[in-house]
Structures are given as structure tokens and as C-alpha cells.
Length: 576
Image 1: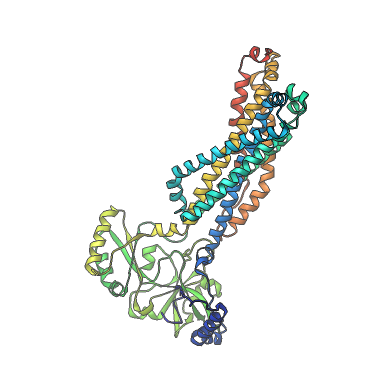
Image 2: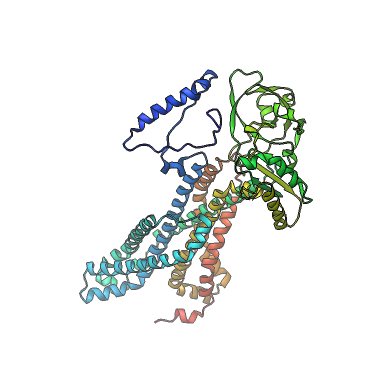
């Protein structure tokens, strides 16, 4: 499109071998200055170019790339939280289980086993369990791979997957060593007289570390619950927000190639003859994903400023359900290409308001503003609506896309009719179409994948936390079986016993949520700050997180407590 335009295109350079990058940059700036930079400098603008390695294109290309980088950080943190919760469960359960093996350790010592032998035994068992878990994880990975690909996209190449698997295996070994170290060192350090008596102080000591770890589990779960609810509500808010555009019932046909673009008028005429079609519009771009920008000099200003622009025909408003605020829109006459229509934001930005009609904007000559349309979100909701100019003068007289507004009909039959017309008008150009609502929602494909993946892995983390509490409570309840039975004999009801034993877990859940809320508030607020239009973060989300974590704890603990309270007290009190 020449030097002065076409900013939506990317130029790729293959540099010669051993070329000094700084030399290329210097020469490139000189070329840019000579062809366009000096012209912009005369208007008070500075234009230059920069080089970017192809490998950086995915994560560092434009403003949307930051969400990919944020996603990498978030999911890495989420994986770490899941690993921590699973590790806490493993340490807790291994420690609890080791209390039943105190006498075993004593007997082994009597038979001549040294401390090193006991450490090797318990660490070996721990590593064996984690190794089996690693093998099972590979099997589960293969089973759920199609679902993961559907949610997150294709997997990386084989070499990178291999590195990930090796890294996870090393993490597995580390988890096994950490999980088995405490019970191994504790049991191997017991005095022989304490070991044969069942552990002495070890058996009766309060499990403060376990309580702390449980609180941390619930805190991590509460954090994930808040983040999941907030992400879901924000995405739902964006998809249901009134953006000023009628998204449903619009079919989009790209005019690929100059031949198809040159036959736009004939194509529109034949499409409009279909009874199922209410209007047909040709534009340079569809109103989603953002429009290109050019330099314009509004009336009363000396230097040009960048303003978004879209080229459209006279049916643009009715096709997309846009509303005219003042003046008129294009009528289809030849003189329309000498006029501009602007949006509400542009009129307000320059303090014109409805007086914008009859004002002029200069670019290749002065053009009069003939109308103002209400604001509509033609770009993702990360930013507010920017000033916009609508022209009826496309580049080289060619539009790039045709939008068809259709009535409620059998869509597949309508598409067949449209395809027949297309092949008749453009026999040498392939037929393709998209639904506008799909294109619009596709702006948020990263967020939708983000929400789905986050919900899945947050659910896994919460489930792991609940399973950990369930297993630990089963062990604790077993230890307190005689106490429960004696209380029952003395007149305690099942309801009273349930309240007594749930009290500690309830306090842990409350403490965990109070610890998690400040961090959750900061994380969610940081995420929402990237959106110009966002939900308010009220107490509802945090209360919901408390209720969900409390329900998970109740289900995990309640079953074991009721089971112990309903058992025959005689069997529990009876001496072995």
C-alpha cells in the first residue's frame, strides 16, 4: 500500500549470515527517514522501525501477547499450588501412617537394624509410591491428552515434551524424598524403649505441623475458588455486555483478491435479492478486533493525530444495528467519498459534541463531517472506545469484506444459496464465510481457554485438598475412637459429637479464608486492571469461596465423624 499507509502489515527480513544487527538497524532507520520519516517529522511526528526476532513473535508481538505471558505465569503458579497441595497430603498421610509403625521400627532395632537401615527403608517406600504415581500420571496424561488439546491447543514438539517429562520425574523424586524424610528420620531416631512401647511422646504429641499444612491447603483452595469465580464472571460480563453492535444473524464473506473486490457491487446486488437477506454491507474491516489508524488533522489543530478509521458503504449501520446520533449517514451517491461520519467519542474528544456535524477533518484535502454515530465497541474490551472516522472512500476503490444480515431461517440452506451466487459472480475465487458472532467471540479465545483450563485445574487442586483432609480425618478419627465411644456412653448425641469434631476443621477453614482473601483480592484486581470494562469485586465472591471450602471440609470430615459416632461403643472400648 506504499509508505504512507498499510500499518496493519508486517515486514519480515531474512538477514545475511554474520550480519551485525546494529548495522542493519542504522541502515533501516535511514531508509525509513528518507521515505516517510521526514514527512512525519514536519507534522511533529516521529516514526521509526524496530526489529524483533521471529522466536519472540508469539509472546512479545503486541498488546495481546501480554495475556499469553500472564497465562504462562498463572498456570505455572497453579501447577505449583497443585504440587504443593499434593506434597502436603503426602507428608501428612506418610507421617500419620508412620505412627502405626513405631513398634515395627522398635522390633527392627531389636533385630539389629541401624538408623541408616530404617531411613533407607522408609525413604525407599516413599520413593516407590511416588514412582508408581509418576507412571500413572503418564498414563492419565495420554488418556486426557485429546481433552487438553481441545481446551488449550496443540502440544509442543516431542523434544520439549520429553524435557517436561524428565523435569516432572525429578520433581517426583524430590517429592518422595521430602515426603519420606520426616517419618524416616523421626522413627529412626526413637529410643528403643519408646519404640517398643508404641512411641511414647511421639504418639501423643499434637500434630501442629499437620494443622498448619491443612490451613495452607484450604487457603490455596480459597484463593483458586475466588480467582475461578472472578474469571468466569468477567468473561460472562464481556460476552453479554451491550457493545452497541448486533452480533447475531450476520454472515461475513472475505473478498480475497482484487478480482472479487472489483465485483463487490454485483455481488451485493444479487445477495440483496434473496428473500432471507435484510441488508448487505461492504467494508474494509469487520467491527471486531480493532480498526487500522491513519494521521488526520481535525479542524482547529495544526499537527496530525492518529485516529482509527473504517471504510464502509451506505448499508453499514443497518447491517450491524448501529444508531445515528446526529446528522446523516452515507446515501450511496458519488459525493459520499468526500464526507466523513464520526463516532460519539471523536465528537466528545475535541469538544464538538453535536456541533461536530459540519466540522472538517483534513487528510489529502479537507473532508466535512456529515453525521455522528453512537459509540460501539469495535475492539476488544481491554480498552475504551476510541475516536473513529467512517469513510465511504476505500483504498483504491476496493472493499475487503461483505457482511450479510439475514433473518431467522435455515442457515445451511441460506449458505448454499449464497455460495451459488458467489460462484456465479466470482468463479475464480474460493468461497469462504464466517459468522460474525463467532469472529467477535474469537477475540476472547485466550480468556475462554484460560477460564476453562483454570476451572479444571482449580477443581483438581480443591479436590486434592478435600481428599487430604478426608484421609487425615480418617486417621484422626481412628485415633479418637475410644474417646468418641466414651462420650457416647456418657450421653453425647451423634449431632453433638459431629459438632465437637467439626469445630477444629471449621476454625481451620475460617483461618485459611482470612489468610487467602487479601492475596486473592490483589491477584483478581491485578487481572481485572487489564480490562477497561470490568466487574466489581464485591463480598459475594469471597463469601462464596468460604462456603464452598466449608462445604468441601464438611463432606470430607462429616462422613468419618458420623461413621465413628454411629459405631458400637463396646467394640471401641474393649481392650485388645
